[in-house]
Amino acid sequence: MRAAAISTPRLNKMPGLFFPSANPGELKGSDHCLLDDKTQKKRPKAFGTDLKAYLKSMLPHLESGIKSSKSKDILSATEVIQWSQSLEKLLTNQTGQAVFGNFLKSEFSEENMEFWLACEDYKRTESDHLHCKAEKIYKAFVQSDATKQINIDFHTRESTAKKIQVPTPTSFDEAQKVIYTLMERDSYPRFLKSEVYLKLLSELQGNSLK
Image: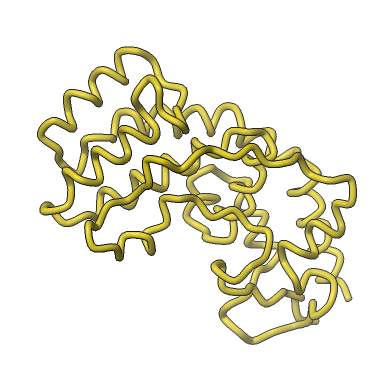
């Protein structure tokens, strides 16, 4: 009996999914800057009571089209179970990023994922563009009046401010580690116990038996 799986749509075409402003695709502008200073944080609505409808909109093939597939572009119950092994495994999976990001939006803490992703993108930035990106990330997430201010201690905030004066690919590493630890100890355990994660896993496991 073959394990059932679902086709995973391209993330940038999946309705209802969380896509942070730190999307590397936004770097194609003439100034190669990462974020828009004027972007205001919008507070999303919490998950609705119709979880089944939510999951269906998030993964369109969850209910229909759950069939055995030889395609490499699939999401299986085994893969979703692996998300529970560590936050690192969850974040290295693009669909996992999207589902977890939506969960963070429901808790009004999506700035943590946005900042983490922005830092990951920043590390891959060419040296000529480091200063511009560093300034944008700092203004959007780190400085005391940032529109998407992350929860870091005073020492880390001040240290980061000094590091971006002469930016290097590691300028945000200290702050990124603080936010990663915060998600790992706080949001991640709640995500694994959340109805959205358990429902997704249950749907996949149930259909693997058909």
